[in-house]
Image (tube, rainbow, N blue to C red; front, top):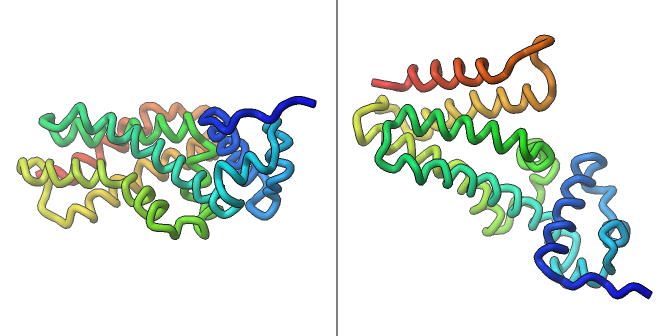
Length: 199
C-alpha cells in the first residue's frame, strides 16, 4: 500500500489548485474532500490536517488567490516608488492583465462571486483589500507630486481598476470582435484613462 504524501507545501499547493479548478468548473457544492484527496493521491486526513475542513480550504483558496495577485502588483509598485505616476499606473495595469491571463481560474474565482461566502474572516477580508492597495498608493503618490487631479483617490483608483478589469474579463471570455489584438486595445485604454486623470 502506497504511503500517503507528506503534508508539505507542495501538497498544500496542489490541493489549493485542484480545489480552485473544481469550484471554477463545477461550483462549490460539488467539492468533495474525499474526491479531492483521491485526485491528489493523498488521504482525507491529510486534507483535514492541512486545512481543518472544507470551509477553511475554500478560505485558503481565496487567501492564496488574492495573495498571489497582490504580490504581483507590489512587485511592480516597488520599482516605481520615485518614478512618474503615469508610468507606474500603466505598469500596474499591464501587470493586472498579465496576472489575469496567467491565472484565469483564480481571476474568475476572485471576482465571479463563487467564493464570496468565504471572504468573511479577518484574514480573507484583509487579503482582498490588499489587492487594491498598490493602485491606491500609486494614485496618492501621483496626487502628492501634482501629476494627478485632486479628486478622491478612491474614485480615480476604482475608475482605472474598472478599465483594466473589464478588458481582462473580455479578453479571457473571448468576447472581442474576431481577430482582436488585445495588446493595442489595452495600451490605448490605459493611456486614455490615465490621461483623463492627469493635471
